[in-house]
Image (cartoon, rainbow, N blue to C red; front, top):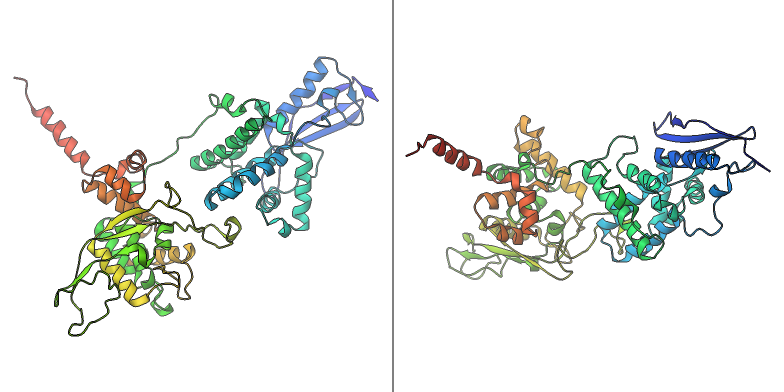
Length: 489
């Protein structure tokens, strides 16, 4: 039975009393029977209501049972839904993606996908439950851990997901872009987060074009109207520790956890590598004894002890007075901590080549005598793990992010005055790397050499560390003063 007696009301905004999350309901009446459709995003609701109004305007008849005109009834074979295509995209990307990239990809998709639904009636699952179910579903091998509630939420999402073809509509795509810009509480996400998630969303649409499921990327049409917040890409000079502060922090590390079995002393060399060699945490975690050239000479017998890194005594000399010279670290691997679900091996730490380099391309980092001495002392006291790694937990495992972050936090309280403790100065272990690169640039080391040692491109180096290059302001000010004082001839 069909009718042209149709009335459409304004969109109703719903606010969850628990999560404060908003949803939007389109309401209309066909031959006296009320109908409704609820959407996660305002743009989708506006688009749906607009379609209803357009059907009324051209005089279409509405089906009384479904409440829809023929132009809005879903086609029987309209291609994959957004969720089905996301599953295909993840399966394509997963094998060759680094663990960190997998995390970013899934985080973006579980943010966008719940917004691209066309849910008629009620029954919309809690968003936290929906995201949790979707994450388990998208990670290979995790589907077996989905509970009953999560399975129901996933089934709802599968039925409500919009057709992929509908993303050619600018308003539908706008709903996805709006989702990547918001946190679950509705507040704005950080600019870097929005940019990262937007890039994943854009790449999924590019893959749809590659498979000829879309003719163009609809995001391109929205870029002019899209309001982009400025992304901060430079290091805050306030986090950069001076050489004296860095040494005091490294000393304070050795006092952390002495009652717990030298927990802090085991990590002094780890943090020292980040400061004196500008290593990333994952690079320091993967550092092996075979990667280290640690020169030393006995001042008593003049023996070259470069190879004898453990300082094994020989007949006639105890080698107690050593002179250290510049050494070198040969970096080959990076082992960031990402979680077992994201790595192929099932380990907490991924095992990859160096960032911004080929899989087997190493990076040579000259290190000063001060770090040579610290690493030789570390080897003498703690040895290495079974696989040759310098830094290990007391039971021989890979040092975890939580462990070294906790040690660093305690060391800051020991080394810094209260006013500095509450500041951003060296707030994270990674800030030691920032301090190292800043020190080299301020010392006048050419940017290409700094970039090579730090594993950056010159362009990124100067952009990221532009505000950490001190000394230029005073020089420029003096030149301006001289120009102001000069009188014309």
